[in-house]
Image (cartoon, rainbow, N blue to C red; front, side):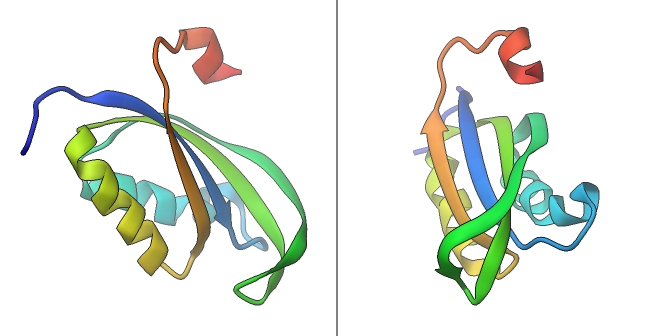
Amino acid sequence: MATDQKRTYEGMFLLDTGQEFEAASEPVRAVLDRYGAELLSIKPWDERKLAYSVAGRKRGLYVLAYFALDPSRLEEVEHDCQLDERILRALFLRKEGLSQEALQA
């Protein structure tokens, strides 16, 4: 069931380190573009040592993204993130009433 109503989501992505932010965040942008998401904001959140090894990596770059997406496509985005080896983990939350200040902070 496709709807024309887009909802706003917050995505936290764990990516491999060792690259500039633009290059490291390219897989996130590609997945969101593939499913027609409108990218509202994307920024590095933190780079840190992981508590445990994830896909053989001991460090990771956390990237925070806000995007508008048709809710019927979210499951496909989640699945695509799991298949992309460059995206180690991804978590999505639905966000209501985000202000411009929240997007820029």
